[in-house]
Image (tube, rainbow, N blue to C red; front, side, top):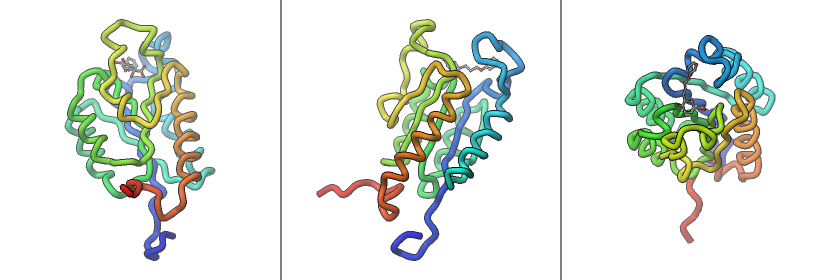
Length: 167
Ligand code: CA2
């Protein structure tokens, strides 16, 4: 509970970008054999054990991802995102993520984007993220959730999800 008596959000939003719905069903050599449904199930179970409500969302559409981020404004305490190909191109997703303010934001990639083609080395999200996890396959999402959980635990409850004082 916060000082105002309102129930504090425990929502951590996990966003998966385009083509990740095919995980485990195509190109297992690059992206692994685990399906997106399995990743989401595992994150929800881990979240429950940590006292967090994990909400998951996948879309192949840039605008739908922007809409989902906007819908999270003020109601989620952390975001984990694999923007997939939009990592390298989307100013719209970057701008939407900036609206979230100071909450923990973790960028995840299944592959190590720096070991791949040069066009994948640039991310429009990394410099506004709290941290980046790249190259650990599906386990990267679990690592990201642990990191978000630990960051939230370290915050005093009333300050969680709000911007720090300017003075
Ligand atoms: O390594 C990652 O997680 C990426 O975000 C994956 C993106 C790629 O464009 C980024 O550079 C790095 C591609 C996701 C494609 O997902 C597929 C899943 C199964 C089969 C084919 C593609």
